[in-house]
Image 1: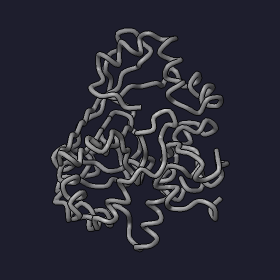
Image 2: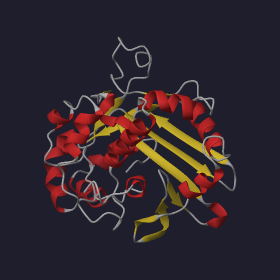
Image 3: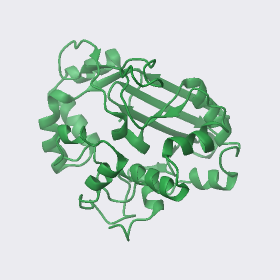
Image 4: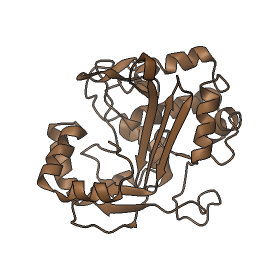
Amino acid sequence: WANTITAHNLLTHSSGIANYTDYTDVPDEELKKLSNTAAIISLIKNIKLEFKPGAKYSYSNCGYILLGEIISQITNQELNAYMELVLFKPAGMDATFFSIIGIVHDQSISNTSHLARGYSFAVSVPQAHLTEAKYWPMQIAGAAGGIISTATDLVKWNNALYTGKIIPLLLVEMMSFGHINVNIELENTQYGYGILISGHDTMEMYAHNGTIPGFLSSLSYYPNLQLSIVSLTNVYHNYDELVPEIKTMLAKHKKWSKIEKTLQNRYPSIIENMNRYNFMQIN
């Protein structure tokens, strides 16, 4: 499928490439052995497309892993160095970096050893307690989620991006244009290039969220108000106890929204624990 998928498909999550962190045939133990981008791409290329490229929206981290590799090959630079020079420095984001190795509690790596710890709770356990998260090695998140930042720096990013200091305003317009419907039932919810677009002309919102074990994040921007809203939390909902059920349902439905509703009906503790610990809802 390398000759049929375009960069546009990757940017809009319309490539048809399955999300490798959800792929039911890859055990968690194998995911943790993926030590670099080449290993991840080697895994991705053997996964059959779920649908014809461009046919619909389906979120996949794989597309952004591939986009990161494209940038590295075109620029002949490591992605972390490129992002520091071209994105973070021009925006004045002094506390932000792209992590390609290590985990949060790795004291041997200078730029991760000082980070906040992440915590999780088992959603299906009644009155669940917080425990320190089982962190992913950052190379698994890669170009799909390896940026580590602060609320202040993310506001700087929005201010720089939407005023044309990072990329020309023409490209910002292309980025913030709704290229594909996220949900056919919600006509006013579309996806641009790396951002979710919702609302209407008088109160449009550009947003994206992110999640890795131990951490949740959300960044929104209201262009008419020139207003940014950032939410960062180091508490994460852990579905590990339900993985066998989730994998069985994923094979049938492929839609997390349907699976989540089924699980909530089976395990009332999920809603109870979410209400107790989650400061924001990330799907």
